[in-house]
Image (tube, rainbow, N blue to C red):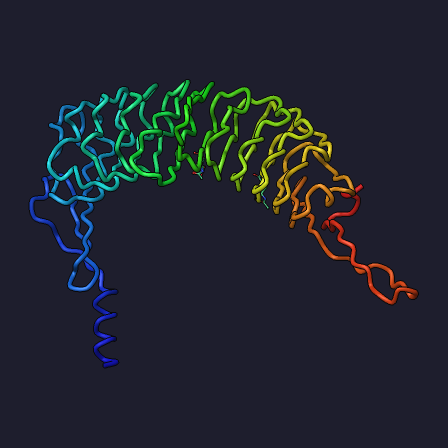
Length: 348
Ligand SMILES: *[C@@H]1O[C@H](CO)[C@@H](O)[C@H](O)[C@H]1NC(C)=O
Ligand SMILES: *[C@@H]1O[C@H](CO)[C@@H](O)[C@H](O)[C@H]1NC(C)=O
């Protein structure tokens, strides 16, 4: 019995790759089989560097799940370029570095199982509003393109309620908008690093858990800016050369936030403790490389869950429990929580 069980388990764990018939010359194809009697398999196909003028769609084996078509100088994506046999089963598609300037409205419409789409390193300025309709996308990389404005509604017609992670870093975004009209946009993670936004875009209504605003020309963060992002866990506002002020109550409403990165904001020199109002779950605060050099002693009353604060160069502060004086009359020890830093004179 034990032997049979062992046999079964080792069969289950067995993963092996085999060569693929019908692999287009110039592509690399690989099948990974696993499961009992190889009941599951993934076909990975890599067709790179074909250059302009190659016939699209490039033929791929039926049942291909992962396709890398990066660096093929594809140019504008037409409705037929991704409509060949084998494309309908794709779960993951890499179209990065292809000089894509335009996407026609039905370019992706055959990709009914597509979860991961990489369109990074292209020249996109816009997307047709319904180009993702019916796709079960969970990860979309649009970084290093030329978007100046972006309508998040493009993710409204996703076929399922799975959360989607969107990378829009390294674009030219000055605005980001959406018209919800009762729809739900399942955008859970949004990376807006290195864009041209001069204020935090309005993101109320998104179930965001991760937001990155690094390297934008934002000068001031205003009261209530993040008020409706109650699911946000991680917020990064780092490397803002022009950020001078964060108003009191700016982070109000971020009741789930655990990590706040405010590092490398050189013009940010003072922080009113009331800035931190409402950050009841915050565990980590990073102020390193900012102009903030000391912390008010009542910081812990504003940040009840904080574990560590970083500031200056390699200055770390931790919450520690200090044993209070022994009260003879009461016969008990009082515990006091204090911030303890590895450098003296930080907490005033
Ligand atoms: C956001 O974008 C930056 C720059 O492209 C990258 O370094 C970072 O890993 C991204 N974050 C996530 C969660 O994808
Ligand atoms: C704080 O930010 C700096 C600069 O971005 C980074 O190097 C450091 O690792 C961060 N520290 C923590 C504790 O996250």
